[in-house]
Image (cartoon, rainbow, N blue to C red; front, side, top):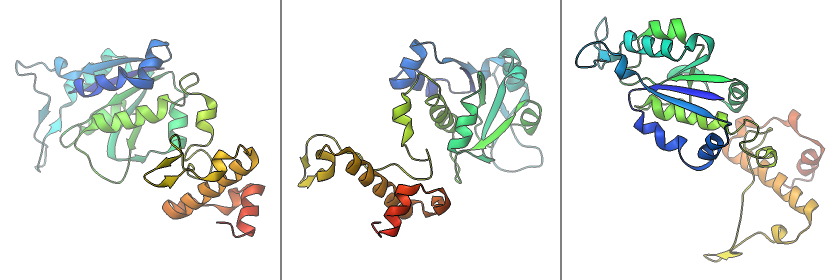
Length: 238
């Protein structure tokens, strides 16, 4: 997958692409990226990229000309273009899976009061919100989406690692433990030390159910339960 990110602050993004799992994906040729500072497409000597909104109001709006030229430069018309905005559709794991199938993604990072609506109307295929809150940087929101998407591409993370994560299936992920066995007087649950794989699987299922009901009860859907989960409920083990 190739990822183009149009931004006024490319330095905010560079570290993400040059570290950790993303760095390995880039080095392996699974991901390529292009950080485009659209300020260089501004025509005036001050490289002005924002102006006051028509109709009045607080803040500044990103001008259409620099962004439009940058989008043309990356050939956005043949790619899936995403504008990140609190006014967009809610981002979900299913949405991430859909985007992970694309060959190319282009992200428009707004700032201030956002971008001129004509850019969205002409170029954007998706307007996406990462949650019901407002942040000051479109770059941060774009990184959230990119991080959720690229890890689902074949070869980035093993399929086993993805199988029982939160939002993979109807429940949240179970608690995880590692060495030492005792930390601050708290011990790793005995079942995880038992080597009994069936009991461990049952404990993990119970913990997934418990965590979902405690933290995200709106995700709980009894119709999606498999036979093992139904047996746990019948035995009142959660």
